[in-house]
Image 1 (cartoon, rainbow, N blue to C red):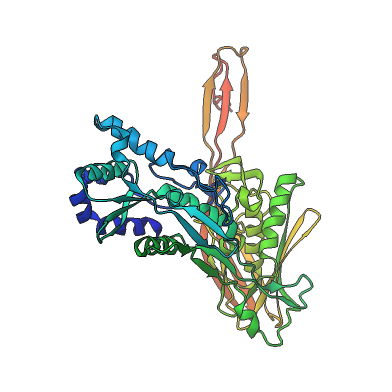
Image 2 (cartoon, rainbow, N blue to C red):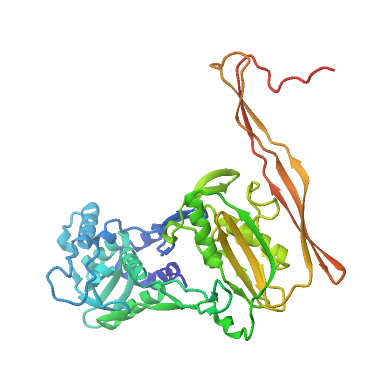
Length: 487
């Protein structure tokens, strides 16, 4: 269950209670849906992703209370002026009542946070929690104003002093973001060493679960507990099958491919970063490799830099430029090793570093390269860099005893279009090509395997590469294109 769905279920469960305590509860339907988006706040060649904080503009992370170790130092708990000011402001906007009429909130005090990294305590309001004591008409208006300001009815307590518990999701989001920054750790995958003589064990990762942590907070509030736990999920490393390899030694190269890359500093950096993420990966028989899973998002937060990328038929600057050369080189190596290609896409334009039909564009998380080990023995991928050469080789302990050929031929050349612009400021009889056009292509692709004197043929889907428009600027007296010469 996502946090969005979790908040939605809370809203549904509280609908009846809201009708009784809030005269304008129906207005909640018009507010933005509440949700978390824990995507990194970065931009990459593979799409933009930004975390979304809903409503409550004055309750942002800048207003968070201190998250220090348990102490009694003055100032550890900041006052709650931001919360009350929000409600007071809405009070002035919607009635003649003063801000004091919305001062019926109970102090829930501090919560001790069960955090594996350090001892922390948060004031309840800095977690986004407010409790309204009593059930008077005045209190009902306060609840309604808080709801209009972005809060949700989080829980209710009965007894001699009933309380309505409100939650500002933006505050809780900020708390989760802070906890995730301290706790989240990516898994380190198990892989073979560079010399292919030993296995380097993987290390499990971990991440904060917003949904379960929110539920822990709710239970603590309802039960009156003074602490709650940050729920942490384990991220197992993909290394369990390394325990089943027995005497396997990857000493036989079964196929490979290499490409050249430019000496551009940023592109070289990106190529090395992506290559290091997949070097040494291990596939048991029947297992699949996902490039996006292993390499991850090509983002600034993960160390990638701006370099040229192909986007919508144009060469532009983008984060992670060079990562597609790594995926393309691996794809070509897999083709020539006889491995099964499960998922692969071509670029919109031909790439300078690899023949048409052999490239493999990747875009996190939508466009992936997936390869399956269709042999009855394990395989290991090595991705090496020697000067400006990128090398991808697959190894096993069993000779392939076959020859693999990849055939790619042009089935159709797609003419480019011309855009003609007349410029009256040009001298007479002037024709200028301001952007040179290039034809597109439709490529037939197939793989032939020769084994024991027999030939097997595998046809792949065709690739289509776009043509590139040619731009021509002419003076007013020029006829373009020129008429054909008479014989």
